[in-house]
Length: 127
Length: 458
Image (cartoon, rainbow over the protein chains, first blue to last red):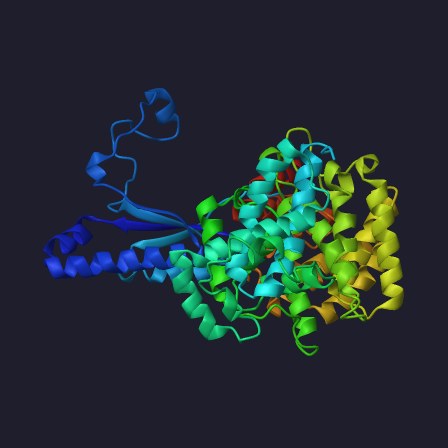
């Protein structure tokens, strides 16, 4: 079953990363590299990416009338919360328990910044 | 000999894959290299046979070419490293005969002219199936390896079938092959055999279910996984009786597949919307499959010890034999669910049984049992993924409790069943609320649309 493991950041978490010594950063990156490697080896990894700074986000052009219909102001950032998406894994694994196990290995998890969401399927239920 | 056509040709290569692989692994014992070699021989066949015509003995051709390729691979640099590790694991019986190591004469003689004892043997496909479903492998790896080594599907075909990247499937297969280093090409002991056969049945069921639940849009790009599952289950059934005469579950599984596949054409509208069992146009059901499946399960139940696949097949037969939905023998179906609940208890069986209770004893009794079941922890294990594989795809018979496989999460099923029962008791408001709740919780796009539609109509 496929799951997306979403990794968030916020201004405070970014400050913590910025305050890390080189050796601490290297250690953090190694954890990621090892996690990605072990998921590729187990055949569970579909894709994983880190995202660039949220300031580099570009929004596809919108029609203000349509945006207003769904309560959006076109020039405001999409997410209201302070947290921004920093990266993700898409995995194909046995069940949500396993997905949670994988998610727990992401360093940001301890900060409450990692979420797991199941991926929709187009499979028909059996009738 | 002219080839019949591309379809026939592909079918032949798939059928010959386990024959060639079995012969090689039995002789040389190095599953990993033999499997690579057979893959290369298949590629060679795919290139040469259309041009040169079918060889007189296609199996022997593949075995000969694969043997040659195996020697070449075996001598390669990567293989040397692998060999050193494998040699430590293989007994002297299964290991490479000493004379071949580094022999200059390899390319010239023994390797080509006389594969020496490389004849297909009767048990090979069974032994291969059991090996590919080895307990040391993850379920995903077993599925991938079985489809490639026994089914003869390419890595790309498997990837398309399961909607994962080709690299992911490739990784699952190589990892599986690494884990199988040192495994002997022989049948498991009498004591282990039944459990190992269960693992094979489960893999075949997973393949079937993946193919059966494919939505109509994606189908065009996906190989016929249901046909593959049925074909491999027939093969298992053909080779098993010699080793496990008392097995009725393989026949039960085959019957279940046939009786389920029979309904495939009726289960979606032209737009790909879900059509529940009680609303399906039964004229679209495949009579031939129903006949075969029904005859098979009837025979099997009369002669073999009963098991969960057989019971599921019996339920499917009862649905399929009803000319109209209202002719369905629900009392019999309920009796079978009662039996299944004892033999193979679990949340999916319990929910499907409750749907049958509603049909026999009315929706209020069913609602009471649903609530009692929840108090007793019925919903625990709904998200158990592939736990107790038999649950997967059990046919609830009615759309309100569709038997989505556990891999879809399952938590939506309780509100879906509840909604259906509430609708039957004449409480449309509550029914609507539960349908919408179930709609939000399901992971299946088509099912979500279906539940939302039920909510609108409640």
